[in-house]
Amino acid sequence: MKVISYDRLILDTDAVDYYVTFDSLAVGAAQAQYLVDKASGEGNPLYLYAGAASDNNAFLFFEGAWNVLQPKIADGTFVIKNSSEAVAMQDKATLSRDEMGAIIGQITTNWDFNTAKTLAESNLTATTAADKGDVFILAPNDGTARAIADAFAADSDVASYVVTGQDAEKASVQYIIDGKQSMTVLKDVRTLVADAISAAVTFLDGGTPPQTNTYNNGSIDVPAKPSEVISVDKDNVKAAVIDSGYWPAADFTGLP
Image (cartoon, rainbow, N blue to C red; front, side, top):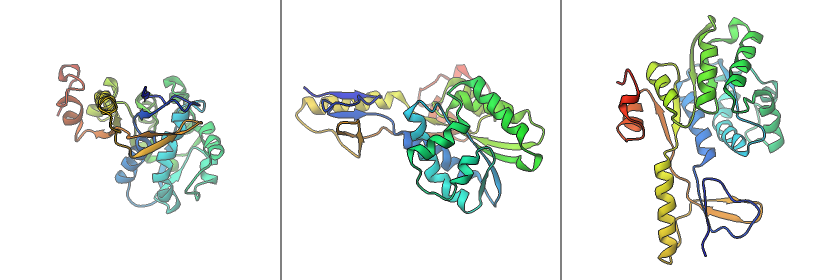
């Protein structure tokens, strides 16, 4: 019998042969890279937000983002405005789990939209006009991105903002079309399903599915080939999300 762990890794057992998943580190890295690509000069205000401290994926998303952002924080491109723990560790290229936990404890949204908006409003209240202007925001997913974006849009000292997301939720696709959310990371479940079917067929034919990564489940290293993730913004939202058939065009207004 061959066991394929789909989307969530089965923990603490050696009875898993393959893992089909999206790469959470790659998602965080894609979010951070978008911020880096949009930044110029030095001293750009950076606001960090994360998911729930109880969710391992929140750590993986943040780790992937930190790997990309940290060099640009260290060289002065970005200045962190809402986490003293992150500021204290801004020269560390690699963070331990405990160090990430300390940062996430200050910036957690608990994946809750109201919590995210309240935290963003509190951060903006605690900072001065000099800490705003053209700001860059690492938001962990689409729901929190919309809530955080609304808070920043309502602050008169914020001239512009670039805010990340993930999941290509319908509401966030509309926000991207309307210019209220900058980007999202599309994790196309059709790709995940196709990869799971391909792995199963390969096992049935007596072969071994392709492997580019391994994930430790607490007992063994499970082989995997993470499915592709796609950065989506206003420039490619129609091609990536509408023309591909992920969401129907009729669900949106103002499409390019």
